[in-house]
Amino acid sequence: MLFKEDFAWGVATASYQIEGAYTEDGRGLSVWDVFSHEKGKTYSGHTGDIACDHYHRFKEDIKIMSELGIKAYRFSLSWSRIFPEGTGKVNEKGVKFYSDLIDELLKYGIEPYITLFHWDYPYELYKKGGWLNNDSVGWFADYAQKVVELFSDRVKNFITFNEPQCFIGHGFEQGVHAPGLKLPYKDIFQMCHNVLKAHGAAVVAMRQNAKQKIKIGYAPTGAANYPASDDAADIEAARKSFFECPPIVNDNMIMGSVSWWSDPVVLGCYPEEGLKMYKEYLPDITDADMKLISQPIDFYCQNIYNGKEVKADEFGSPIIVDRCLGHGKTAAQWPVTPKCMHWAPKFLYERYNLPIFISENGMSAHDVVSLDGKVHDPNRIDFVNRYLLELEKAIADGVDVQGYFLWSFMDNFEWALGYSERFGIVYVDYNTQERIVKDSGYWYKNWIESNTNGKN
Ligand code: FCB
Image (cartoon, rainbow, N blue to C red; front, side, top):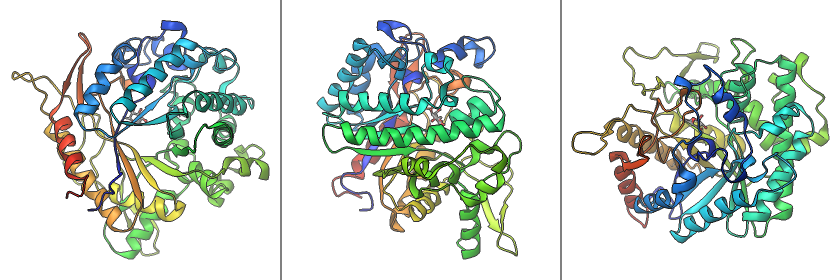
């Protein structure tokens, strides 16, 4: 059997996308509350005010997870539900919500994986300069410390950041996500550096204060480019393209970079190529910073959705291959490229040499409730099936893959796209908050069953 006995077969969500209850029980605002309430920022003005009302329905949701045989649940904490002002006074009711959620998961034998930060930055801290303020490193470390003090008696796995590429890239480079700014690159690189330092400072704080031996990971993303053939030259070209530092064009630098965000964390240095290319924008980077940023972590996560096919030119340099006519794509227009699930984990494992988790993968479809009352989503089944078969190839190649989190457990607030895209394996009727397990949910249950306990 390729997948290990204790493989973490999971689903993922994020606080702002599902919880709702945005002003309830003392929760402070996040930048996403403010942004989504501004005119014209999200699809049809959608907000996460209610979202999936998970704050009130988490027991029902966890029960569904357990019925589907889910073994691990990756969710994020709303920082401003715990610290309404980002720092200082703790909101006991917010803490109770997460504490009850954790207990409920454990009751069903579902392993919690907590992401500390999945984009809903406390608004009060944003007003103080947010990631641009050098104090942001300490704010995040204090928050991380509190989280392990509160929950590490029961939770063993923590992830610091989700997709720093996106919250900095979409939020401050392109301005399409909260807080909706387009800042000069000097500021952006300062923020990147502070986020990386915040990651390291959080790792230190968590290790020092954890109540048991915990495992810590980091969950970036990036274009998961893969080779056009098994030819050694194409493989090398794809690897190069996977890790290269993109030039600053089309407001797309921060979004595209795997190595800029991961080399410092795992290898303790920024990629040389980027240091040269971005030189004029970079802040002071000291040895002490790099030491802090590269605190050892236990596992490496990557959110993997798609990539581009790459072949080598006559000099071995990468060329992006045009997608074929009529290539597969999801409702959100994301290309369907299963091969990236073979190559991305392999490239990452070879470079970073840490156990790999796929912290997100899945697709949006315009799912509807059929006349039979069910939600039939064959495209999603086919998508997940194809990607998982490719993941098996990575494992067969020797990559130590320890978990897979399907995005998402349920349909939810898809950031600037509001509720217009459905990524769940559980359908949510946003008018009644009724949940309906989609065909893909049952399919995933079967997949999990047949890939554990010595089967397959
Ligand atoms: C990722 C995000 C996640 C969700 C999926 C579809 O970039 O981490 O919150 O929006 O995409």
